[in-house]
Amino acid sequence: MTNNKSENRDKWFARFMCVLIACCLWLYVMSEQNPVVEKEYAVPLASRNLTEGMIVFNVPEKVSVRVRGTRTALANMPLSDIFAFVNLSKLSVGTHTILVNARFVRGDVVQVTPPAVSLFIDVKKDKIVPVTAEIVGSPNKDFAVDSYLLTPSEVKVEGAATRLEALDKIFVPVDVGGRSEEFTVTQKPTAVAKDGMDMQDVAIDPAEIIVRTKLKKRTQTVTVPVKVAYKGELTGGLKITSATVNPFKVTVSGAPSAVDTLKELNLEPVDLEKITKNATVPVKIILPAGVSAARQTVDVDLTVENTTEEKTKE
Image 1 (cartoon, rainbow, N blue to C red):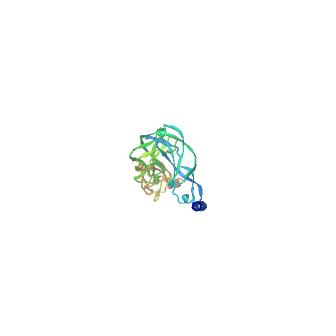
Image 2: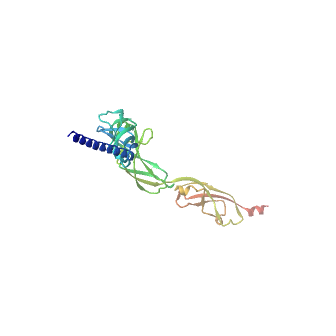
Image 3: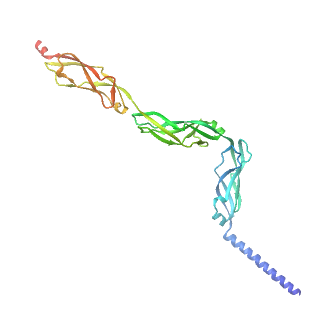
């Protein structure tokens, strides 16, 4: 009887040892084939439990999280299985240093870098601000900006109270480069601080402004000399001893492209066959297309002498 019990006990012990050895072998094989490893990931940093009506600044977009898990678990793991956050519950306005929390659903978190972040919490506010247009470039040289219409002309700007205090203006750029007629564009408004820097940390509503720009024709005024021309010949032995134009310069107006290169004005030719003595002849000014003048004629004072009489005296 004693021998049977002893034999049974030995059998169960042997079975137990076989199971134990099998488990150890399984753990050994698994550890060799699928070992526990560590790996570091860049993880988005979330903000949790921020009091309503508050806004937080200086929170890093990402932190580095080192985790530990089996090779298989880490190999095919979606990044969403690791998450990092800061708990902003009951924090007041001001600067705070907050520990970074991290969780890993498939293993352990070994290290978070940085372990804490310094951030600033402020009250969220909004205000209505007028929008201005800033002209960029130059239109066609014959045109100038007459007016522009912004729709809407005001926007709501939302952000931290301290940032709104630093706001200088809201503007939309309007590129008129080479334009020669009315046009309409849609532009995104930009917030600019008093130090001249763009403010990316405020929200502008609406996010687009319609700008209708009107142009007008430019007029340029210049004063240029006139040039006398003749046709025909003097008769009766006469010759011109002097010719004076009064006035010898004329003020004209027109599109810049028409008057910029205008160096002188031509006159209709003076018909010398009609000149028999000293005379003042009104002569019409020849004006280029698109150019106007306050006067249409100038006077040409001609002094002549008879060369036949001089020869007779000799």
